[in-house]
Length: 299
Image (cartoon, rainbow, N blue to C red; front, side, top):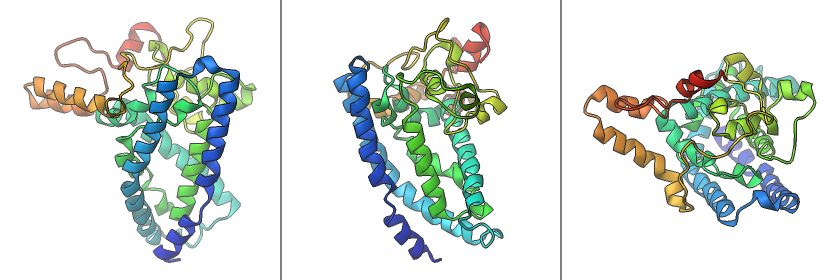
């Protein structure tokens, strides 16, 4: 197929039209059962972050789709990998693997964290928080998927799978679902695992980056179990920004990086403030997640 054919198929895809009503209906249902977990201004900011991220992502998404197409065209596997059932299964694992590293590095590289932090800025855990997407992260997101079309997967398949992952992840942002049966908890990302990811407790910092499959966190050493009996998750940031100004929510960490870069005199320190983990300091306490956790408890 030509690039035009793929774009026409993408334009006719109804996944987003199906997902948005489901998201809002699910939020309303959750609200009926747990009104205390919602705050009007907080939910309003979450919805604005969703809109902001969609706007920022528009051009990178188009460029990514074109890049995926041309990378797929040079793949020696493009005539082997079509849309067979097994191809979708392999793509699920490939997409989820890419998402894990994209998400993990959003927490471990401060510049990327600045684009992701809006998603973690709410002190509430509810389905509305799922829509509070990181804004700046939309710029660099698709680089983590560039290797997949070289395996023979076409760009439309990839975008569909990314959409499926996004829909799945929406439903793990809730406190209404307790732990699921052990086999499910062992393999899949669940509300319990994702509550850990959104927690600001030292025990839980930078853990459980999974999209659909929690196995990546187990394999790469970033898994943490939810232990509500001894360490109930506390949501938000280690230092909350305490504002409902959507511009500040979307950009505050970029401003913090700029301040740190200006006050550092050495080039090495300036670069560390940009590319090292959040919490690194050249002249103060090391508050990186891995440092804090070593002092208290293993992840």
